Length: 309
Image 1 (cartoon, rainbow, N blue to C red):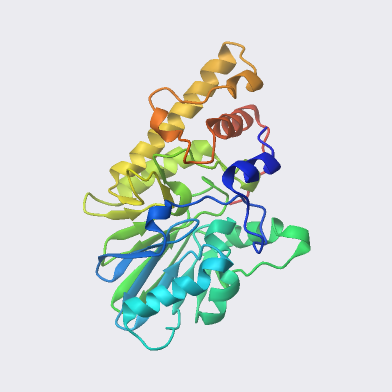
Image 2: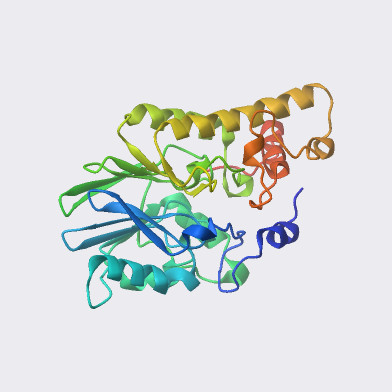
């Protein structure tokens, strides 16, 4: 099993101020500090950690995910500059896609600037369960179980939870009029993903969820991904959902075949590239294929915690 100490070392370490037990995934540093509008006042912001989504429309600001405490001030400054306001705008709605620290670490600062905040109930439970040394994490004030929506600035924002996938508390965020979906870490765009077995991940349902999302939306829908390969980016079409599905299916099939041949987990984990998906493993990306192989092995053999979505 890839130890937490080794993971943190190869990932560059978790930021000292973070209160959750989660490794630091570095976003493509060439994009650091970049705010990009996609359409109808909805876009992405990149610094460190998971991709931030946002809507800035008719004076209303929505922020999806918060990265780290150390990036929170820069994030708000970016929105201030984009809005051409002389003072930091209030966040009308803050949303977390899931509990991992590279998506929720900035909550500690940004929740104080937010009028409302929401996340899946499982996200909040996992934030509390994984907090370091009994610390109280900054969590969303409102939770939902299956679906939640609100109207704001001539936009309908809908959240959905389709069961355990990347974690036990994932949410997708749909800006209906803009036809843009933030997937959180349901999609690592052509890089090895993190499969958080201890946080309730379930690859079997993750695969089904990606197919459900593909069918739920259309060819004009734009998707914001939690992480992405520098050559492929953090946005894309619904084809990216099936690309992620195919990778997870290939990992599942690879582990099943190896187990049928009597290959041990330790020998499986010596593999560094998944056939047909060699591009996903990169010296620039910290997570090795071995983590995925072990996670799927544990799921197939029943060595996982009880999951409550």
